[in-house]
Length: 354
Image (cartoon, rainbow, N blue to C red):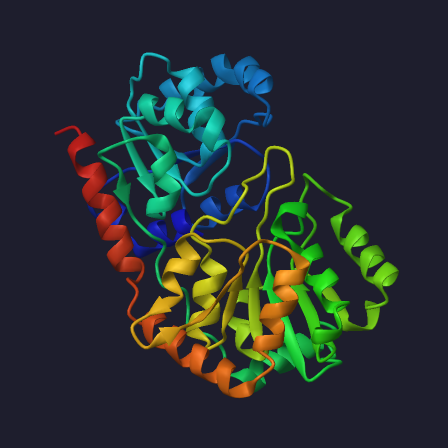
């Protein structure tokens, strides 16, 4: 979304940059490039370091065949693959770091190899140790749909709103995203008025996660209050339909981030005037602190018990409304796609050949 938003702004094309793409895993991104008129090939590269090393020679040939001025490595896997494919650092690589994956094992090494490091939040970039780190946060998302319209769309997708209050999540269904924390919180007596709407599809890395979550809900006796309808297009614009939004990323899954990076879903919730509950301190909790008061709650620990306590506080309508107003005011001042695209183009400008 970060990358496609920059491309859609058209700033790079006006520079002018000729844009080409190598996608390291088959999926919807290649089609997204194609619909934008961007040449793209899929060169599958496994996620493991051994698998990346085995594919590095072929990736090197694919990159050099294009004769680029600069290689943009969007994410940790891309940066590791390019570091192995181009050990001489020619052409130079810009690493766009989005999350906290492999911070202890790889962040400094990969940051050293990159010509420039761009992070989508200051906290995300700190583990690289780069003193010249460039921060370009994601653009302000699209405006939310009105509450009634959003609720109608969700009802068509199978959501029935079985309780007075709903905690919403819009996330990939992987264990580290903490949907299970929300399900466990519902079993707490303090959360009797709350249900969970978790919008998202199973991820290829954990294809059975939806089934695991539904089984957990049945085990805890809260199945009637848990709805996992699958992916819904433009889900971030539907968050005004719920009463709070959870971003509950937590440690515990091998190879996964231990906490949330920028967390665009939180901004989408704030735009909709909905309070946010975040599992740990970080870029989201920083955005929730506003001059007029908090726009949500940062948990003391990513646990079901702490989440249940937060939901109990947000059972009060006045509290929810005040936090929602604070979040909405701040979110509407965030930079838009044109601002972000211009900042990115300025980083790339020195690398363009005359």
